[in-house]
Length: 500
Image (tube, rainbow, N blue to C red; front, top):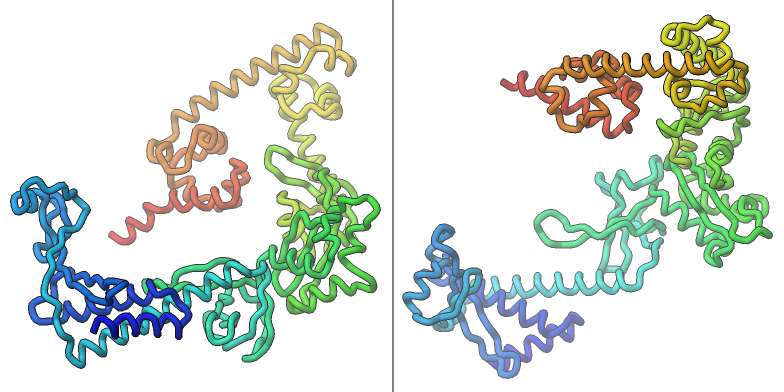
C-alpha cells in the first residue's frame, strides 16, 4: 500500500494544483478518522503519520498531559504525576502529548468511503485557500466580478470563474439597485471573514462605503493617481446623494473642474456606476469656517459662529436659502456635517437675531444680578463681548478700563465677579452632595458629568434615566454615542425590575 499511497498523493497534488504536504495532511487526517471508527477506539485520540519517502504509515494513540486539577477525560488525558510514574525520568511537560504506537488497522469499504470524503473535502478547502491567497496577493482595491445570483442576504459575485465567490451583504448594497445573473459589477474589497464555525472564508465587498466613491474617482481622474490633487473627505447617502471634498496639490489645477470633467463626463461616469447617486464636488479648506461654507453648497451662507467647546457650528442663512441648506429630509446638512466632522445648526437670520437677543438678555440678567450693576452697565459689558463672570473676574484691568470704566469701578466689578464665582462654586458643591450614590457609581459618569447634572438639578439615577439623549447632550455636551450609553446604563435597572 505504501507505493500506492505515494502515487495517490502525487496524483491528487498534480490534479488539484496543491502542495503534496496538503494531500499528505488530508490523508493522515482521513486515516486517523477512519482508525477511530474501529471497535473500541471511538473515544481515543488517534494520530496517523505517513512517511513522505516510503509511503509507510504508523498509527499512534496519544494523551494530553494535564495538571491534576484539570484531569477530566481519562481516554485522552494523563496527569503529569501519572506519566512520571509510568516513565521515570521523562522530560515531558504539561500541554505536550504522550504517544504510544498501536497496530495499523485494515479498512473496510465504509471506512474507505469516509476517508475518501474527508480527503476530497480537505483538498477542496486547500484549493479554495490557494485561490483566495492568489486573489489577495494580486487584488486591486476595486474588484470586478460577475453577478452569480441575488439572494436574500446579499449579492453573490463570482471573482474567479468556478473557483472564488464574494458576497456584497445587503447593508453594503446600494438601495434600489437591481442586478441580474451575469451582470458585470464593481465593488470595493472590504475584508475576509470566516463563515460560522466551518472555517471557510468569505470575501466581503462593499458598494456603499465612502472609500468606494473615492476609489472610483481615482480611476476616472488620473490627476489623483499623479498626486496633483487629492480627495480629502467624502460623505454618502448611498443611492441618493454624496459629497466629496477635493484639494489641489498643484496651484495650476482647478480641483473641482478636474473631478467634474468636460461637460460633467468624469463625475457622470462615477454617478452611473453607483446607481445615479448625485455627487457634489466641493473645495476642501483647512479653515473650518470656509470648509463648512463650501460643504453646504449650493446653499449660500450669510455667516457662521463656531463653538469650539461643543464642536458645533451655527450656520446663518437667508430665509430663501434655508430649505436649500437643509436639503430634502435634512440630507444636505447631514452630509455636510459628515463631511466636515462638525455638528451644524442651520438657522435663518431672524432666528439667529432672536437667539442672539435671548443670549444677550440672559447675560445682562446674569451681570445685573451678580455684579449688582444697572442694565446700562450690563449692556456695555455684553456689547464688548464679555460672556461670563470668569472673563470679568480675571481679565486684565486695562481691558475694562479701555471700555470706559475707571480704576475703582474695575476693581469693584472684578471683586464682585470673583465673589459670585465663589458663591456659585459653593452652591454647586452642595448640590454635588445631594447626588444619590447609585448615580455617582453609574458606568460612564465622571466628576465633570456629575457637576453638569447637579447644575441641572439631576441628582438621582431615575432622573438621569428619564432624560432623552438630546437633553443629556444639551446639559453635558457629550457625544451622541456616549450619551446613548449613559442613558441605557441609567435605565438598565428598570428592565431588571420588569424581568423579576
